[in-house]
Image 1 (cartoon, rainbow, N blue to C red):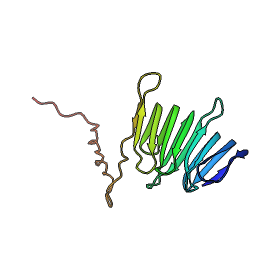
Image 2: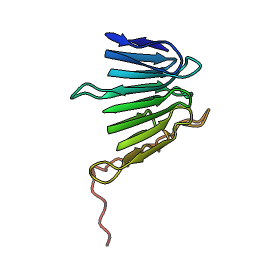
Image 3: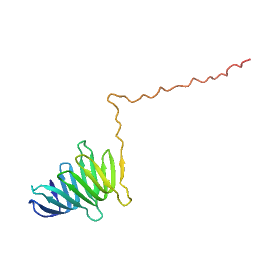
Image 4: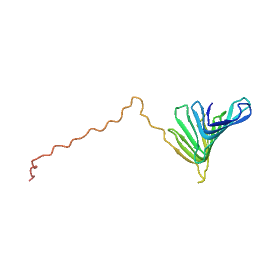
Length: 167
């Protein structure tokens, strides 16, 4: 994991917590997390097992990742807890997750599995989780041609002489 911050305090030793402060950026593959402060839990194997990202006052912690289909997922919340072993992101407080081409979710707490794209949520202050699910884009079948417009009809020419009267 590639980590950037204004300052750090901690150890790269088993079973420790390292604190990153100021303009925190954590990148692992297509996964990127940002915030004002991050607590890194280092497990017994000296691996980052968990990251807790906190936003600065008036801002939101951010996560983004490109899924296996090439679609961008972004999420913002007051706090972000990421289980680095299982790929589970928990966004808490003013949580919003956008899934490119699929929709978005809003709630007080949203849990997003970065491996399966499964989303769960709990209600916010209005008592509901809000979701927008987009329809699958329609693509024309291979070799299909767009429907042709019907041929234009031309009206019969108007006669300049009156029709003869019938007796």
